Length: 229
Image (cartoon, rainbow, N blue to C red; front, top):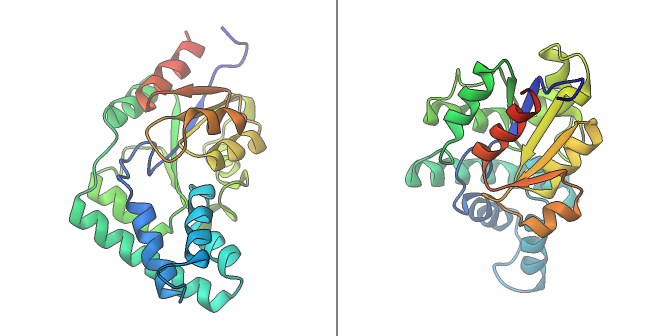
């Protein structure tokens, strides 16, 4: 066993613990339409590529970077949040198979759990209520709760501080995007794992520096608990 066991697991939501089914991409389409980007052509294709590359990052940051105009970014962000909420309500929000059990298993073993997102606090809260997950974790964080979203380390470090974890090398991070990996590495987490249930594949996750790649959050829980055995 390591001298320092894992005491905190920081888990992404959409694509990691919550099934996405392409809803984020569809909501982005609505958002860039609202911002005035033509439905077809090179500008739209560039926007689609940007969306895929920046999956997992703070949505308002993405729109500010993509559009270069604060008013347009706010318009796009409002359209994204509205479209995502509507699409999620139509499709129904479901957890990744085994996610709730994995979180319960971690907490039962003494590992604190924080759920993080690139969505707004309002959208995150809607997802948590739809899943009946308002009490599932020790902490839930959106970018606005921490200062900056991914790929910056703020949400992981905020979780460390709020949950009174002794050191960043007692932290394990899990996400489905390269942004999740960048966040975990920037925060100094000991385990920075990618999961194959979301936006990015194994090659992308490993290239981003993932310490581990697992099939799902259920496998991640076993990985973390093995560190405590």
